[in-house]
Image (cartoon, rainbow, N blue to C red):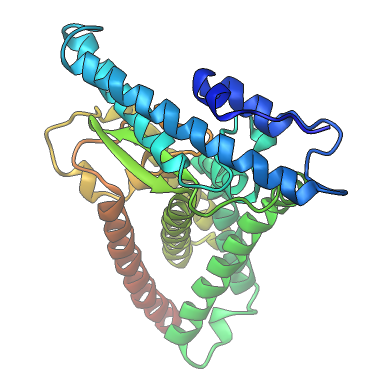
Length: 335
């Protein structure tokens, strides 16, 4: 039996309560299978969109009242205004989707949301651990005489070694996410690439889609993995114990990134921290999580941004890769 929600009831009820009624109400046929299932699902989407629009209009009125000083005063008013504005933007974007649903738990998230949320909820040390292991494995193969030392073109083989470790690390990282993705796809579907993610960045409301957030997180992680592998490869070329050198250098870089965020104040006046790759290894500082919806506030270091992070990571990776090629040439001449 399908619950029928009238238009007036939609506008009278709070949105989270309505969402539970509209999307979780059909206990007997929740996905619209069976006779008339498609029509029932289509009938549920319109009330959900109407509810999101109605709630966004309510938030716009509340936002204006806060701005006029009716609800809050002083510093609390500014914080409340920003939070209300972010929530309004979220529901305005949500109302444009056919399935205007708020996911209250990770179990309700479809594939795209679950993948993005999983990437940003794990610590940076775990996401870059495959890169450390991959570069140490390649260094061990080189030490056993199976790679770089027997190569006719030393620079080409050094490049191939770094590329192999990079691809292996990325493949391992994404394979680790396959179980979560499979469960989310089977239970909740693929999801909408246009699902909104709204956050507060430096007091300003920023709106993204889940596809944009996923792409930004993947780019930062890809460049960060390349940097970790390049640093590990350079250390293995310069150290006597190649595998140990790669492990210490790669792990040390990740440890330095964690300590860096604890030592350097967020509102530092210096521009030097924003030019280092360390803060950008923590991807969750620059990409909002979809599970946090509209109430997340990102607080990265002063002067840093997602665009600068991508540029800084790329420049540092290229620089360390060039140093690796030089070190590989010296290793071959000395051997």
